[in-house]
Image (cartoon, rainbow, N blue to C red; front, side, top):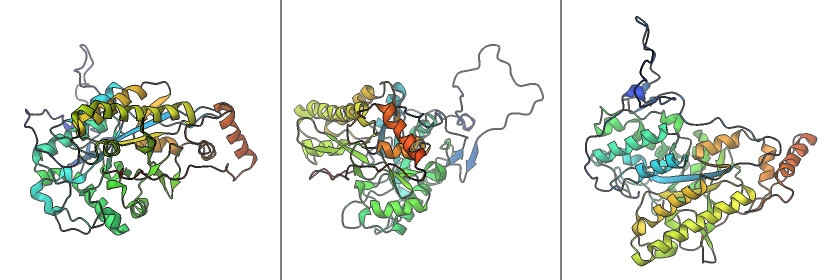
Amino acid sequence: MRAVRKRITVGAVAVALITGLAGCGGSDESPQSGARGPEKGAAPPKSPVRLIGDGSTAYTGAQPGLAKPTRLAPGQRPPQFVVFSWDGAGEDSQKLFSHFRGVGKKYNATMTYFLSGVYLLPEEKAALYNPPGHAPGRSDIGFNDTEGIRDTVRELRGAWLEGNEVGTHFNGHFCGPQGGVGTWSVEDWKSEIAQAKSFVKNWKTNSGLVKEAPLPFDYDKELIGARTPCLEGRENFVKAASELGFRYDTSGVGNQVWPKKKGSLWDLSMHLVPVPGRAFETLAMDYNFMVNQSGTTTKGDPAMHKFWGDQMRDGLIQAFNRSYQGNRAPVIIGNHFESWNGGTYMRAIEETIAHACVKPEVRCVSFRQLADWLDVQDPDVLARLRTLKVGQAPTEGWNRFLASASAKASSTPGTTPSGQVAARATLPSGTRENG
């Protein structure tokens, strides 16, 4: 979702009561017949909801639907993680946010939605945004309108209650050498992050939608990771994010090997994946496949739409299979809520989800869930996993391969196996991410 579109007017939307936001094992159904009610004279139960600030956000307890991560047992084969993520997430007339929430529920997949803060800021309040290096009120992706904000908040609310993550894609989406994010200082990034948080924490005041239900999370705690616009400005962003307590960054380009930390942040870069029928790989993102197929035009030859969508789907499935049958490295995929080339890339993503997320030992998760899992693993086991190259399964089998890592670590305290990590790859010419 690059620019905010004209919204389609819809009927009135029923809004859940604030007390229904906790979502901790609750139900939308009425109590069963004969269910015991509260004792006469008993004090009403305390609501888990605690409004924050102007009531745009609220603390509602632990996020529902998230299993506690566990450490691999000695010699245990790791699960296959797949992360589907969305840059600039917002709900517009295409209704792709709500559609993919449904896809996630159908295939037991949780995802990461990188919200652009200006999608919660109405155009008449644009001057509240003070982008680094630009005049107040400037944005390369526009702002929103009242109905667009209402729709986007509804989807964010539901997504979080279903176990999905809400990250940030920042605000004005400035790319290129003239004032783009690649020119920003550490302090510029801190300002941009603070403003992104502010637009989320004050959407009611800014939009006038004061009677809407709040977002059911504390964004200061929810926001732990991001992807920079066009993958630019990463070095200074990572410095700022580390100082602000973020836990991961996904603004880089890498090969399908096990991740490691860059400073205090997990480097969860997107991957290079095959382009079937071509002699190179490209970034696992809809925009990059499009550039290699129709150039920068989003309305290429309709006769090619099916072929292009199939090519992206097959490339992503090939990438999934070489991890699933090989080194089990997490597969990192990025997308936009866009209908480029007739929506063919949205079809490709949905078919990839349907293929991958139903397989045994596969976990389609958010970046938060992946970072949580990585945090509880034995560092020596992760170092051992990083010695596997793209698509390389242990020749001696998983049990011996990982058991030997634990044995070596216990016999030589304070040391870890040396890791051979594939060099950071660069994109083929003309395939810069434009998320």
